[in-house]
Length: 522
Image (cartoon, rainbow, N blue to C red; front, top):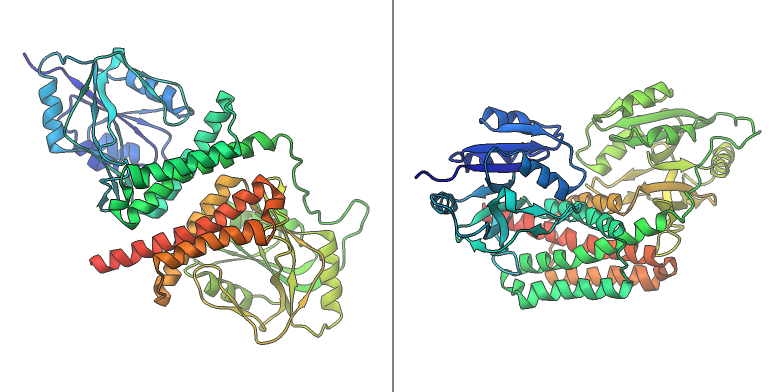
């Protein structure tokens, strides 16, 4: 008697980098079925070229999506994979051998060997991390949950010994990117279930997950990687809680005020000898509102960093002068952009900033009086979603935004370049509105991107950083933001901001350490 035929079901979304090797590792299967979630890359084309059957379907609920996918399989026995997984030769042989006769179980768990880059995570609960991946289609289902759905299957349950290789994280940046995405789904899941989670419970669970991974499951044996991955597990709980709090509070919060070009009944002001310089990349959603608040300026210059959306077209349609230049270094890009300005004064903006009528009038009055200062700081009101962050060092947080052409430059650093000014400057009173983060997910994504650039800057500068110093800075930033700068007065929002400030330090060091380790291995 031949073995029972097997369908391998793989769920994908933009997995062009992984799908080929995944499919090649199961070339022996009777059917390879790829359920593609509207990928915008070559995932579906690559899968089809390798002989897989490709079905497109948008996923709005992971559990329901998986159940639907398994129902499309041609065969009774299913092996469920993700595109970043590979079936080892030992596991492939074991599966085929198990299906040569009717197995004594309805499904079998498989040990997962998780990798972070080239590093196999052996401890901290990351191995063997068994999951139910081989099963009879008619005796298995997932709960219909947004993320991490539970599996339901009647006993008996089998256990295989061959490893499934999971290349889940290319590096720390991808690791934190997935943490951000999964915690957003977790928070939505909690909200849908009507779950009540207190601050005390969230803190306890976060600490418990960290200590369990680091001590009980011996994550410490992995060294620094083990520490970061234990931190990852603790932060999964904390970040999920913060996003759940955000979702429960949003309905009760009034949206932040939008700056207007001119209040009702007020005529447009005279044109001022100012070049407004806006650096943009894929800012189609923000740019129009930004430009509308600075139409009083003599020149509006948008320097576009190879946007793939309608950023450049929107800017041009609103009368802005558009120049395209790829950013390789933030400080260098800003200096180049300011040098293109044609007016004696430059107002530097980001696309998520808005000039209020009060600030507009103050700028016009200031530059018209031939002031003694060559530059002016402007206070900023920064918003996360609908919330103005009043404390924790976020307000007034003045930025040198208005300056005479040719009297100001940045250091050529990848992120957070320092201003290099050899003279004093003044201060304006009216604030700039800064709609910097759409929500906590957007905030965390920005921190993830910026810490990658921060680590690159440290590496380029040859900076020496120790783990002890990084941990001290991590604790210092949280204490400073939450206590010394009064972040606690913003409640849970202040706690979130302080947490992200401390995470910035740890993530920067982790990526710096990763880069140094990679260079040493070459």
